Length: 163
Figure 1: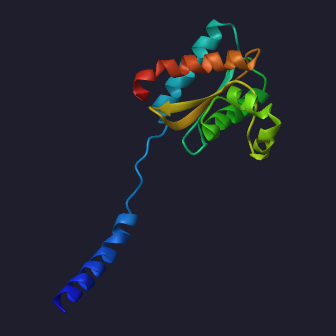
Figure 2: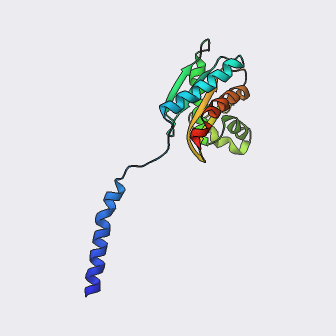
Figure 3: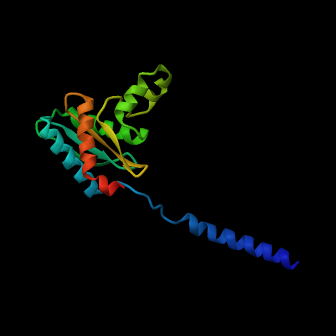
């Protein structure tokens, strides 16, 4: 009888504490404003040095725009296209150039059904260690490979902070 009461008491106390644990906030890594601005600055500097006028978008872990900059002399479409590239890199956890290569495979055609997914270079995931915490998208250089090179230069600027 005593062990039955103890078991009942233990069960009740466990259920009583479970809601408290379920209410604890999540703690996760994400893109900060300072990090986003540093990445954008490094990206723009590299593209400017290479002679390209680009727009840059940083999305956070949830795929939402954290920061966006339209470069001087860029076409209006580069803002939205840079956002789509950043979003693609974030949701696929790979570069948008890798996504482009996947989309060439007819067996991967269902990927085309994902809203906002684009298959062209210029989007790179932002990773803290092995965890993807956002994405960067660059648009305006003559070719996705050049956009991606500028994005990688921006990420190189904050490499130490992402370890």
